[in-house]
Image (cartoon, rainbow over all chains, first blue to last red; front, side, top):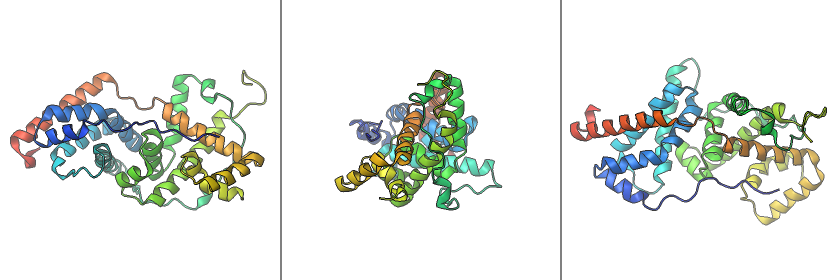
Length: 209
Length: 85
């Protein structure tokens, strides 16, 4: 069985030049950085806050905060990792404000390991996503990932959707590498378990071989 | 190798970061344990489906609006200094 290939390529080599220019107050250079990463920040913010208006605010606040604090970006990490760290913090603040009654933390531990043990081991259809319309599929995927605790959801989104490395995810979320790996495993297994309900091979034969 | 040990290494296996020896132990296990094979295969599909999904795409009109708001706040920050934005 082959391994998962990362989606994100190497950072663009002129990025540091843009960051340096933006540090000197060049807003056009910063705008180019916004153009490169606004889609990613929006996606991450939506996944964490699960609210479109909050996500719009997070995009604005995170980029503005990044611009205001560019002096503190020393270039040991990628600009994108640094930006993601800011965006995740802004998104978590939104989430806390919206749901003050619930603890929202990336540090929360969720019960025992048992919640990730596979119970559903039926094989899936060869092309499970083709059983549904695009809108239905989007709805299934959204509802399924929204069911994960924020700490798991965020690790999964950064690693598997946005393609950050384990080290970058740890840095962006201020977690240890073992914590990222453990959450990623549990997030992946829980999503798999929940999606199995929708995607498993059907015996009756409804067009699937 | 037991199924629980396989599961512990699943993420490392899918990410391709295992040493050759552990990888081959895992693949031996996969060859005879159908349940772990299915779990591994469907976990991989889970990741791929999410990676390829178009969840939460930023619409172009909203994108333009957000970008121009950010740019104007950055200009304002430059003019009025750090404390007033």
